[in-house]
Image (cartoon, rainbow, N blue to C red; front, side, top):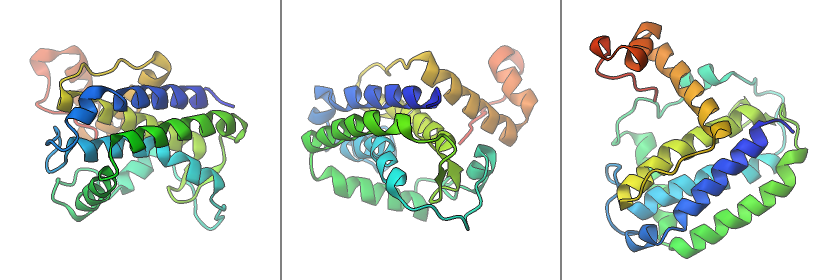
Length: 209
């Protein structure tokens, strides 16, 4: 087991705690902070970052799929930089809104069950295990889930008027490192450095995604 497993599980538990907040259920059918997405749909999308892990552990390996690093993975991502009305984002929203119809209680129960299962199984899975559906190693795949949890936890908290949950450092540090690296690849190192350290020369945006 690597340090990534306990970090992912900590992120998953933080997501579950936010999803279980009464404010989320109370605002379920209301618009979220994301365009064209309800709070329920956003909650489903956050939950998916936990629920998507168990299936990859049982999926058969496909040695014909070459694995890539995280930088290349995000460079290939069709959703990265696409607008909310793009086909890929419309599909994500449709899937999330469809499952949101099951309600908040069912979603929270599914996430809790997934965390219990992953707590038992993930520590025994090699970090190098391929995840062919994403062309990533398991450790890198878990980091992508942690980043999504961090970002969408903020989205969901803002949507229902709650403080954004603080994540433990073993989650936050690798997530920020990933985002900084992606932002530097898109905007250049100087732009990121200035945004973090020199407000008088900071660019208007250094978005990573």
